[in-house]
Each structure stands twice: as C-alpha cells, then as structure tokens.
Length: 617
Image (tube, one colour):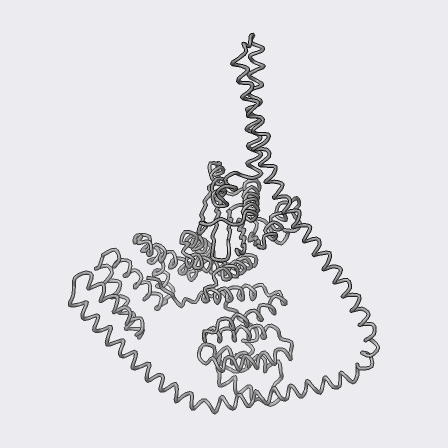
C-alpha cells in the first residue's frame, strides 16, 4: 500500500546567484549547448568558467552521471583557483549524488562529508542542514539506522534554529521512517504527527501530503481502514489542488487498496478505474501495468473471474510491451553511447590540457615565490625549531595532565558508586535491622510490664512511633541510594518501578517503552544509567513544566539507546556549559565514564529530547 511520490517538496532547493549568471550567459534556462558554446569563448575568465562548469554539471544530473561528475570536477578545480567555496561545496554534493545513483553509498557519504566541512566553515546553516539530511538518507539506505537517526536529528535542530518550516517537517518525517524501519511504529506515528502539525502551521501542501501519506500507510498496515482512508483522501485532495497527476494516480491506487482490504470492491474498482484513465491519458505505462495487477486481484476477490482474467491479460501484454521498449531503448542507448564517445574523448582531452596548464602555472608561481622567500626561511628555521620544541613539550604536559584528570574523575565516579552500594546495604542490613530489633524489644516490654497512667502510655507510644518512622526513613534513604530492584532484577525492572511511582503525578502523562532488555548489563553500567535516568526525569519534573514525558530503552546487538522526551519549556543547548550545579555536567561525565555519549536536542518553547547511546561489549 505504501507509495513513494516524487513530490516537489522544495525542502532544500537553493536558487544560487551563480546559476542565474550562467542562465544569462547562455541566453536560455539550463541550455547545455549554449553553456558549452560559452565555454569556448576566447578570454573567458576563471570566475565565469567556474559558473559554467557547475551549470553543465547541474544540467546533466540524473541524465548522464559520467558528464555530471566530469564537469563537477572542473568546477571544483576552478572554484579552488578562484576561492569560490560555495560552488566547490555544491559540486562535491553533485558528485555525491552520482555515487548514490551508482549504488556506491559510502563514496557518496564521503563526498557529502567534504561538502559539509566547507559549509560548516562558511557558517552556511541551510547548507549544513541539507548535508546532514543527505547523509542521513544514505545511512538509512545502508541500514545504519542509528547513524541516520543522529544526522536527521541534527538536521532537524538546525532547521528549527533557522525557522525553516519545510525542513522541520521533512526531518520529522524522516525520523519517523527510521522508527518505522526499527519496528517502533508508535514512535514513528508520533513523529509523523509532529511533521503534520508543522506542515499545517506553515501551510505547505507538499509537506502536509507527505505526512498524511505516511500516517495513512501506518493505519493501513494496522488494517484501520477508516483512518487510512481519511489521510489518503486528504492526500488526494492536495494532489488535485496541486494538479500533481502522478500523486493523484498513486492516491487513487492507495484508496483502492484500502477499500480492497475492507472488502468494499465496488468502491475499490471505482478508484482503480479513475487511476486507469489518468495513466492512459498521461502515458504512465509502468504504473498502469502494476494497476492492472491490482485490478485483477480485486476482481478475483469479488468473484468476477472473467474481468480478473481480462485484467491479468492486460497486465501480461503491457509487461511484454514494456520489456520490448526497454530492449529497444538499450539498443538506442548503445548507439548513442558510441556516437557520444568522440565527444567524451574531446572533453577528457580538454580537461587534461586544462589541468596541465593550471599545474604549469602553479609550478611557475611556486618557483618564483620560493626564490623570494628562501632567505627568509633560512632565518626562521632555528626559531621555528625552538618554538616547535616548546609547543611539543607543553602539549605533552597538557596531555599528561588531561590523562591524570580523566583517571581521577573515573576513580571518583567508581568510588562514589561503590560507596553508594555499601552505604545502602549498611543502612538496610545494619541500621535498619537494629532499629527493627529495638522496636521488637519495646513491643516485648509493653507485653511484659504494665504501663500505668496516660502520660506513660503516651510516651511509650511516641517512642514506638518514632522507631517506626526511623525504620521507614532508613529504608527510603537506602532505596534512593541503591534500589533493591536494581540490584536484584536489573535496570529495566528498576526503571519500571521508578516510573510507576511518578505516573500518578497530576498534570503529567508518562509513557514507558522497553525493547530488547531481556539480558542484564554490567552492574556498574546499570547503576550509572539508573542515576542518569533518575536525574533527567527529576529535572523534567522540577523545571520543564511538561504535560507529557516519554521514556524509551532500546537495546540493539552492540548498543543501548535511551531516549527521554518531554513537551516542556525547553532550553538553549548552546548555553549548556553555563548551567550551575552538578545537573547536566554530572549526566555527561557519568555517561562518558561508561564509554557512552549524550545528545541534548532542545529549543526554548519546543520541549527537550535527550538521547543516550552506550556501546555494549
């Protein structure tokens, strides 16, 4: 039932100044022939060559990967020469797309990371958000879901900071797809609905349609036909308003599929027939082929065997036609490729000559510069050597101090945890037992001796009550320092017990989800993680003014992820080091002690997400 629409989301489309310059030079919009003619103009400046090469690479994108990559290479070469880092980063991103089209996803990630480094240096927030999202997409394709989720979250945070509403909605959708891939459908729905809320706020039909489609698919997979139809029909209304023919076809198919599941075959065939007309009118043969299969199945389920057979024949005939067209296209592609080889060779020759000339000019400049500064370098050599030795010595000292500080910090945390366990046990097994024994002795005294007078009876009762309160207080202190459930049953049970105690708090809805926590962790890790969860939740209760709190523990093969989210007032994460007390700094240091990492995702007024990742060995 899922549909993947090529909707023009407009999330990261950038209208660069240099593209407009390329268009004005070419006298037509993205005219490859005109751009190539401009390239042959005598005396063309390096700045304009940078623009034209990038324009050619952009125009060949998704039509000719080889030329896209080659022209991007030339654009990068001239961009470096003219110090145009903007074009250089965009050309690197184009090469990343080429590698993605080829299925070489790690090489694509490497190109996007190079582009990301340049955009970060330029403080190009929107460009950085684009790179984060692109890298997240590639990691998702490679099923590196944890990495993909991290990049999507970073992109989402940047989009919120620069108030890029469509970007916020898109990244919420992307985060939802990660949870869907992990089988965590409830969390996926939460993020799909967040995306829909933002999309409706900014009145973006494209973003609303994407979110509604995802939510419709969610309910369709649950066989909740009524809700699936609500969202798919909302998609259809937007497709009709936007005159998005492809989207309309897919929406009619999705609605027909839901009606088929609900055994409402007349309604299903009505929607399928509309989709069929649109496919024929717009020559959408591949979609029409799949539609014929769905219609054949629908007729079969409605016991109309004759029509089921007719549409099955249509499916087979169209499949054979498409296969023949594909073969003819391949033959034509071979002929075209043969004819374009000469042109490719000319381009390669031109690029080689270009690189040779640039290299010769570079070497000449190096020789001239070397002649001028060689005497100065001789004078500086001794001083530089002396300074380097001083710097190395200081670096060694700093490294040693840092290592000692790290060792001391870890020792302190380790000692704290051990002492906490010892004190908790002493309180429970020592002082607690003594107080209980004292109470028993007092009770035996009451039964053996006659206590006369109201004052004596009241004094004796007060003494027994004080002992009761003391026993309860000692047990409470012992439990807070180290819950017995944590020691005996492990982290998952201790967290459940902790959440149960706060679930009855007024004005706070608490949700807990634990996945894969069937085996216990090391006692030290369990103790520290319990303290961290306790600290974060306490901070939310005290300061966040939240009405909803979601806690998730998800264990993978080699990693444990803890996600704590609230809808409270949030805070500025850029000022995290300015907060006083042990609070957040204590959380970070304890997680780092067990070789984990903490990511705070928050903006004032939009709640807080805390993501803790701990490696399991």
